[in-house]
Image (tube, rainbow, N blue to C red; front, side, top):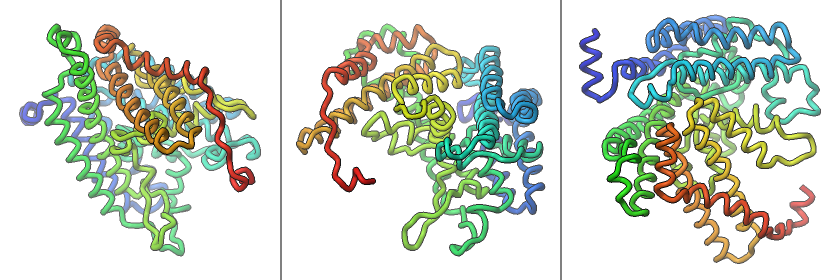
Length: 463
């Protein structure tokens, strides 16, 4: 078996641990398919927890489940013993343990060298544990002072241990997400809410959407395998790279970012297929006639939305969608004081939490600070765009915002890929820090050039 694994791994150009992970990851699709035939909510919880733990063991070894148990048990203990503070306690304990694992395993270096460990799955699991605790905490609060997301997701009753374990490990969905709410998971297992039979009939067939996600996954992996040999990341410190002209270096940075994204598109397409085929990915019906099923709960990326983004502000809505939603609900919105508007502080704090969640590498930290600046600069362009009534000028600003987003995103994401401070600064410096200077200049200009707010119609004001 070891010989076969080694042969297969060398044939597709990956290490044996990565091959083992990929096999287990793809296995989440048939495992999720079988949950459709499990009778009873309790049995589904047991199946979800058991298959999730089994796939973790086969992929990462026995120690992975021990690592997963730590934040899971800490979060449950906090909910059991200190409900009024369980959200904050679980947030800091969960992130504290995750940071410790990041530092101990130096997982970023392992991923760059073709290895893999359970830290990536622990990242997803940490978010699920924290959201569960925060929602249980919210169950104590009056609805009047809560945001819509808090009202929808709050838990009035403590989940049982088997419900909690099933939610955390559900059929291996902790491998790469998507992150979803425990309230949705409980309604799905109990066939309540949108999963109950209604006047629109039973929940829709998932097979068409699953096939679409699998075709997308195959295309993404094919393109990634084709492109990756042509754009190695090691070149940023190579003297040959430094001899290139400015535009060629900038173009190479774009192609490195473009190439790397297809790997994530592949991973998220597989996880999307698994969650859709289980039925959990169903998120309701469209308002069209006839109504069509939506599978938004499973969706983690909108590929065209990323590659053709007209504004950096829209990127969190189309990239790593469920984690971006988690950050908005559990970090960004909770930092906004009542009666006040969010500002750069909330944006920077959210991006910092995202950076720490990924790992304590300089490249991650720099990338997410960069992304906060990128979004702030894009907001300035959007305000200028909205303030003008000149159609030609408006179109020009739209194009400038598109080009700005394309440039700064692919410049910034080099840090996310190379991780080390030396390589990050070498790549940024090779294009004269254009992707750092440009957002800062735009933000400063935003304070100087303050366009008048567009006049709203009477109907808009009444709304």
